[in-house]
Length: 210
Ligand SMILES: [Zn+2]
Image (cartoon, rainbow, N blue to C red; front, side):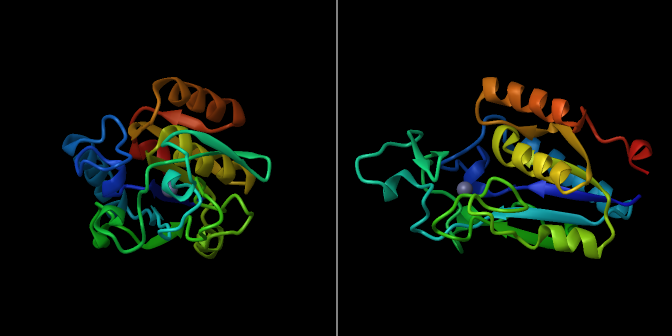
């Protein structure tokens, strides 16, 4: 049994700290400091750390500005799947897409949503079924257990956690180190994850991870 850490989308555009266009409630300086403190603790304890990074081309399908007449947070259907139209965010190479975690605290970055045609809440694959390198990195490192935290609980954390289960990993989500976009969908996301087999802990207890 080997545990790997996945820190989801700690990027300026998703945080109140950087006044991002898609800032998630509760992502202030204190939250980011907690993310960094815990990630450092896990790294120092010897766990490999992978961060995911939303990384969209400017013409990305998920931006409402790329759909004439649409407003932010309206939904459309793409190949039968509901697509929320977000404010433009995490455009490749922009400041808002930058990670708020120091390079020394992680071992790999997995970028997602890089194809303009598909959104990708999951760190494993996008809505078009194209895989990121995440699964092959985890396999290469012989990781069997995942600890996931970051933003947003009701989108990328949930999608990554459920895909982790689908790929055969044991998955733990750390509730106090996640923040959701909407209180209701955050609550149901946590319930769905637990029903699916994700273990939800409030905080990180190193003794439980070994
Ligand atoms: Zn995105």
